[in-house]
Length: 489
Length: 119
Image (cartoon, rainbow over all chains, first blue to last red; front, side):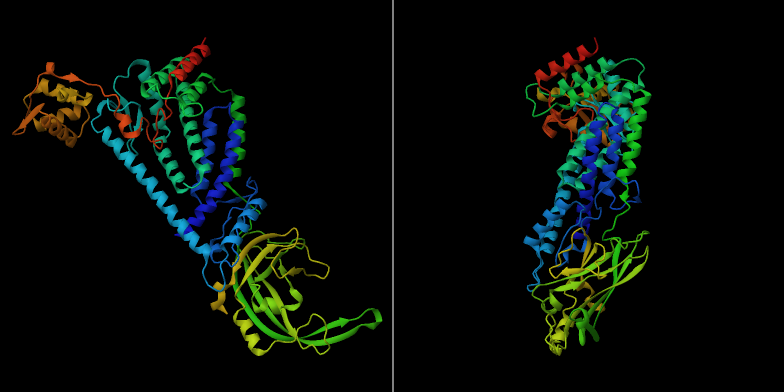
């Protein structure tokens, strides 16, 4: 349940970016026929419903699409990665300060919060769907005694505004007393709705919105797209009739809306829909070829751009951790001490804790390069033994380039201690066997951080602070809580 | 005299009865199917409703009117939509007009707008 919820959240975020872009482009298309604006909303709808998409170089999305990793709930340091620095910083800091799981009490606040949120989300959906179903049946009841006029048109005096009802065989219901030119216009309008399949599109759109009911931006999109739907329908009616019917059509609209309203209630805010529609109708001109080409061009660029994911996408779904191995070994290492001619080579037995990670790349692109290798580092709990004992307070990150559709073997080692016979600074004595055992058993209480790292330092590797902070210019790609891999060990 | 006010559909229905009475109820459903586009259950429901209001009687599958045409008033409903949806249709249906109500002032404005535009 909560995993579906998390997917929806990710989709909502992506859809929101797309929605903002659509709203912007729509402004730009204000003077073009409304059909173009209306078509733009298709992209938002797709983003709201499909959690996946294809990757393309032409993608206009500059953000990570898999924003919220599925296992965020289990991460010892949960974080999201949206590709937008500000969002990431704010969200992750909030999560850190409020919801980081406490290692000792094994209570995971983030997991609880997510569960609760998922339940609330589900309840919201049930409420909204019930409302929709109830309304639909109420309406059906109202028109149950409507009488047949012709074709698929029925009339009844129990309604005041015409509408289309039905999903399989849609019927046009009109109030009694409509006649002449007014009736003709209205019927043409409703028939255009039917021809375009609006009686299915609109409820579908509603369903998509219901899924994202917590996102106010999506509701805004819904109402804007509904407007575009009506206006482009008006425009279609006018293009179907050869004479200039703008005035009489507007009069029909006005007359019907006066009948509908009480005329005494003042407007809530903004222009009413009727006014906006009439304004649009009066401004209607048969679109010139130029306008069509231009608007069509905008759409041709924009729609695929918004539908596809960026191809440099590296996210939780691109990289998977196939295997983790941990072992401990003692090895002879040599350190040079001194300067110039005075260098003394000292040999030590150093005990190391080594992690080997098999990282698999599912994308067809090489991940990482010599300038920006894929790097890994481990984040340990500051109270843990490994944190305390790992050599000199810094660790060396593992780095590598992960082949396209391939697996890379990247390692991280810690020196736990050396037999320090000369009191060299920075070397700890090899810990007692009990301590080593405890380290082994807690080796998986850590978080693996995979990131796109900076270039190698001059010594061929990069030093990292134990608190898991990443060097300048690196981009975190994913975090994996190693606790889930414990049984593999 | 409330019972003698009929909605449009009820009036059309009574119209058929006045014309064809006495009429077998099954026959009646056939006629209503043709003239009004009603399914059988719809017609039977209507018979039941109006019988309950004393406008007709249905005895031994024969329907006859209990009131005369002159006695009855055709009543055009006004506010029934408002009672259900507060004057507007749920916006998830394909609609012709949507929810914002029109004020007198705005109606005048729009009227003017139309006239100006098509001068």
